[in-house]
Amino acid sequence: MAQVGGACRSFKPHLLMTMAQIGYTILYFITEASFNQGLNPHVYITYRHIVGALVMWPFAYFLERKLRPKLTWKLFLEICALSFLGVSLTLNMYFASLKYTSPTFVASMVNTIAAMTFVIAVLLRMEHLYLRSPRGVAKTVGTIVSLAGVTTMTLYKGPTMKNFWGPLIQIHGNGIHESWLKGSILTITSCITWSMWYIMQAITLKRYPAQLSLTTWMSFIGAAQSAIFTAFVEHKPAAWKIGLDVKLWSILYAGVVCSGLIIYIQLWCTEAKGPVFVTMFNPLSTIMVALLAYFVFGERLFLGSIIGGIVVIIGLYSVLWGKERDQEKETMSPEEASFVAPGKEIGGSQDTFKNMCGKADNTKGSEVV
Image (cartoon, rainbow, N blue to C red; front, side):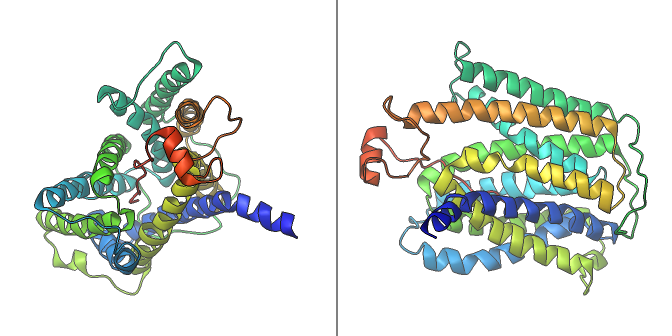
């Protein structure tokens, strides 16, 4: 019995991250259904982050009461810039692209964020690249392969894969995507700004190491910024009206589950296993979205998306393998034989680990998706 309990504790992060990816998979389809019913993507982003902020605020207020540093004007402006980059700009482009492409394509493109983040970090000298080491070669080759997969998915659609039966679940509404190229450009641009947001988030967390509070601030500020932007591009008051239909459920689901519960799961798993562990589960959502889109919802699946998606995942795992080897080299002494995530106990106490490494890891962040 004790062994069973120990196994459950050991695989708890794996189960939680699998649940998180299932949650994201459902998000793509319920969001597409609400867009097909006429929900404006920018209105969706605004309402979603209002809900997310209201859900996160009590946890941030009570759980991080003693952890939050004093909020200065300089720090507040930095959080505003972070909110603009991660919420207002990135997510507005990202979910607008869903209107022009498909859930399978959008979910596949998320896998490029790890490689893009690596490229930006190298350019900003935040990441060191050793081309003479296997891990350096893996990160470089993986980045090139991922970008090749993105190019394939964008420029080559290929023939439609034949489906031998109709959709098991019909999503009503206008399912015709207006412009694949326009949607592809929006998705790629959003992934680039998303990667830049990760870099900036790591910098901000060093000065404001309260993850739940930072997420709440970004949701509140991002919702306000998105509301201002939406007011300029959407002049019909009817676009802001939400009834008791799929539009409301998609907003509540995204705000409570994705911007609330899943964010907490990711933070916990990052603290327990490290950020590389969390990122490695992204392709799981891509696979589930593709399977559901094709077999259950009857979405058209193009050969280019399949080929490009496989290439992107191969490149992603090459980059992640190199990053994990980097973490092992930085956090482990030569005598250690297995990987231990930052912040875990080595030799009996966490202080011993910190003394051995020289500093604690303060670069963990949260994802607002």
